[in-house]
Image (cartoon, rainbow, N blue to C red; front, side, top):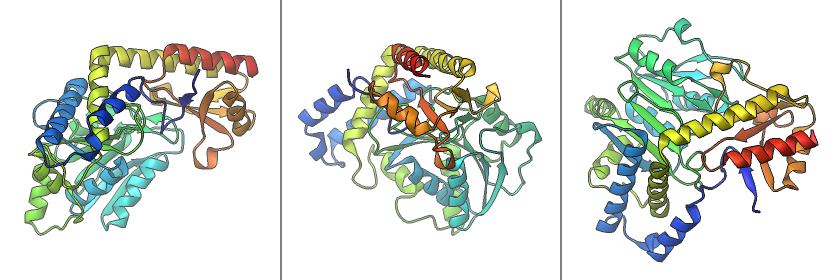
Length: 359
């Protein structure tokens, strides 16, 4: 048996990755031009499969970058002339907020302690804010922002752009695409691929905002901002030489997920999450870090540990099971358990059995 990675990214590879990667190599996709018809076909197929999988309607486009972190910078630079608002309750949502300050925007935030979510009804966003930045799944702490809360923000602030970082949750969350303007993710988590590709889902309202800012003399970062992605994307191309292998691979994995059924994947994810949380609730060694059930992530479960986390992680490696360590200051006292589609119910049952026997 090979290793089973419950790490939150890079994560366990989707079962069909090897097959599709070998196909790509046999097709010499690592050497083709990103200005040719073959690449254009790959771009078109991958975006079409993602739109089908995620239920993305007409009026949204998909663009590819080197990482989701890159999209943070591009989104702020291209779509906000003066200000942004951020929900901060972990290390990654904090970094998105700090990016805004670093490029000179007026950055507002609502901040919650680590392990806690937000009461959206009690938060007021200043009128001058142009874009609202939500981290739907905070990978560092295992806190989710319920999709209903994100939709409610758009209902309340229809004039503002709503950006959603779904890096460690898609394809699990089921968005109403009328109530979000942008969603971004990277492939090394729930899509079960090696790292090296960011995906930006963008609606026309966002593109028009970027065009309006440019017309007003706003200068976005020159390295392939949103409008350069739009220009090249209209031809099924990218501004610079992309990771063609991974764009191809993503399209094939999206097709595999379509064949399984996204609702089946979502139900299975919820089932596995409940199994892990139930175990942690009953265990004398582990307890869920996030106490509010509504704010518990279903894709990255974070548990406090009574024993040093490093000892637990090392002991499981003997059984070919790899857990994620706690993030930052929680490294010694927490484990993070990724619950992505590549990990089966049988894998989760094995993990729980090993933890039960050992602890």
